[in-house]
Image 1 (cartoon, rainbow, N blue to C red):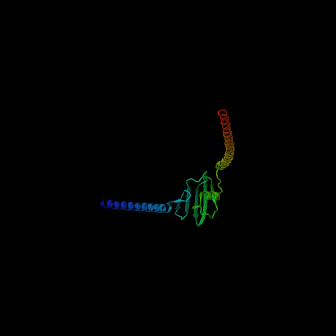
Image 2 (image 1 turned 45 degrees about the vertical axis):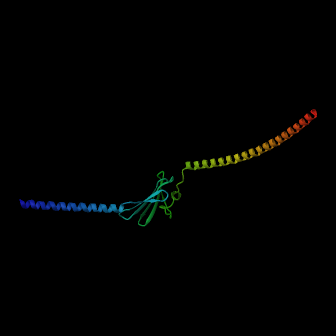
Image 3 (image 1 turned 90 degrees about the vertical axis):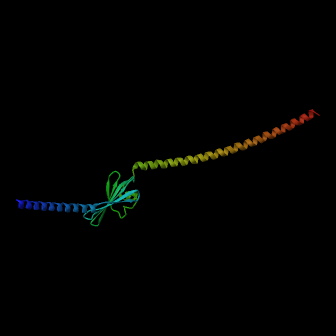
Length: 190
């Protein structure tokens, strides 16, 4: 019976050993695949972030995510077997494959949006046009105000000159009247 127990124990230990080494190999392969598929992230230009991943087959995916561009949300550059594909995603979620030689990972977001053919929101264009017209009205108002101010100054000068001239006339006539009154008093009192 001791032979049976020891033989059974040996077989049990061997089975456990085989099972553990199979699990370890499975975990080692999973860890290797994870290491290859891990993403690296770095800040990009134009308030964006660039993340890069390489899968087990060597396919490289670079994704540039824009934080505050009003036209596009991200650009994805995928390289498989030496073939480069650029996909641009708009803020509304529309995707477009773009054939460009431009370095979309470093170009401005608006330049990438132009290459993809994504136009600015019509509401923003209308707002800009209203703003431009308001600037024109402001400029015309300032110009008109200057003209009115100049005319007011000219009119004030004319009124002022006439007032001074009138005051001089009144002053000389008053002085003349005083002289005549003084002569008349001298004649009455000898």
